[in-house]
Length: 128
Image (cartoon, rainbow, N blue to C red):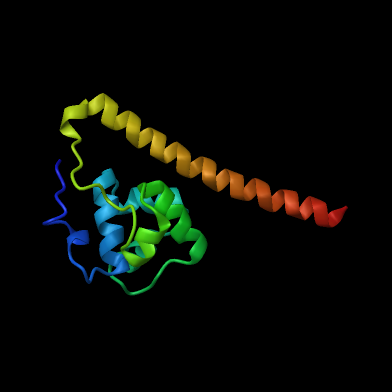
């Protein structure tokens, strides 16, 4: 799949946060359901973000930018490192694309585990 910014959601100057979520999610090949699962939210939450009905909290926005491989600045404002000009995935082959998807999924899971570990550590420190 080739995504060209001239025709992608993020090509326009007046894109919304929802437009950028859609563009970045599609560029990574994730479905709404995949993204919801990786972020630990409901499918309808991702749909609401993409439809500009609600906005993600700061922690979910940061996590989403990591999962989708875009800078948080671009994600929130449209400025900075966003979806690459052209994303070529067919040349990678199915195995490499699958591996890339697995890596992104593991990064999101690791990020979520690290946050949980940090919260547990804080609880233990307070208990001492």
